[in-house]
Structures are given as structure tokens and as C-alpha cells.
View 1 (cartoon, rainbow, N blue to C red):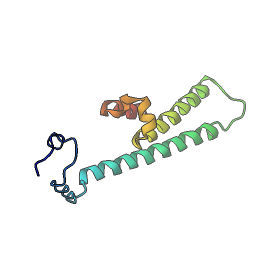
View 2: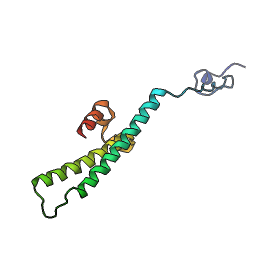
View 3: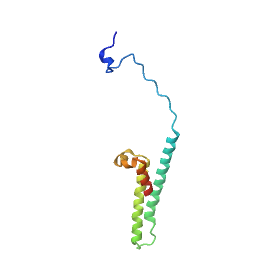
View 4: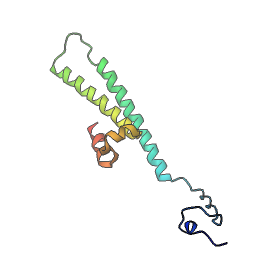
Length: 118
């Protein structure tokens, strides 16, 4: 029986086609695994830096009533340090919702500038 014209165009599946061959099992990429582990280590270190900066916010000034300009500037810098460290954690874990807001951090240059800022 000859094939119908719409079957020849590829619009309808035919019964003469064989099923696709199963994909061969691929070995995991060692370089990709190493990069993921490096991202994890970087995220953990940034989280520890955020905790240390947050603790320094509350434990730095041991003399009550002595808030000068130097102390205020140090506290502001510690707050920025906490924010940048949290940003590094989010970028290194590659949270897709956040990465959609800042596409610059998808590139290596953007990540490098962020790391240098910390």
C-alpha cells in the first residue's frame, strides 16, 4: 500500500520508523565537578565572611558612649561587607530568580568585579 502524501511530508508519524536508540551513558565531566566544588567552597567562605562581619558589627565597640566618625564609617563598611558577602553566596549558588535580575553576574567579568569588591 503506497504511503499517503501527508505521511511523506512528515506531518503524521508512520509505523515504519524505528524507535530512537537509547542514549549512551556518558562519564561525568571531572572539570565540571571541580568547578562546582569550587563554587561551593566559595559560597561557604562568603557565608562565613558574612557571619564574621555581622558579629563584628555588634562586638567591635567595647567602650560605651564613644561613637566617633571612625566608628560610624567602620560600621557602614561592615554592613556593606555583609551585603556583598550575601550577594556572593547567591551568585555562587546560581539562584536563577536572582540571576535573572542581574545578568551581568552571569559573565566571568561581573563575578570577578564582585569578588574584588569583597
